[in-house]
Image 1 (cartoon, rainbow, N blue to C red):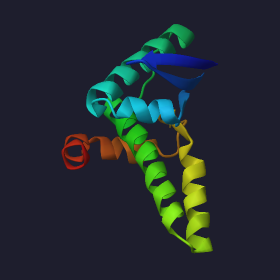
Image 2: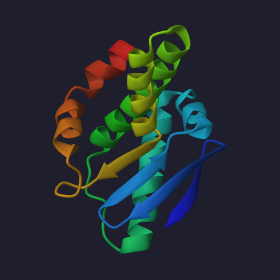
Image 3: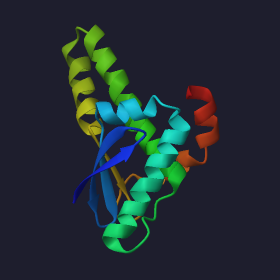
Image 4: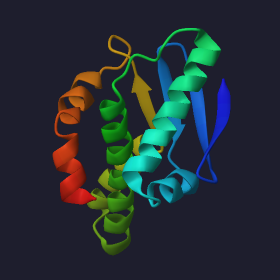
Length: 136
């Protein structure tokens, strides 16, 4: 089910599936993250989890920190790839950047057993305070 969640005057497009969500990485999401990234991300995650319970009558069992790191990584990797693509004249670099951009357009966040990369984001979640200090 596709749902729009309004957070801080930004309309975030999310697809809800059993055991997973997909957040569409667009200008609205980028705009949200430009407004106090920690608080905006936390508010988004709270609303996502609330909507998930409404739809499926169970909690979405992914750590908040893991979700935050995955969202940030996808949004900022896409932005970096777009910048590199603009300044690069090498076809093979641009092909790699196109693949990164393509894979970052939807942020697939799934529960353990339904997301092959969940262990990566859970591991990185441990470093969320450090990542936040370094990048934000």
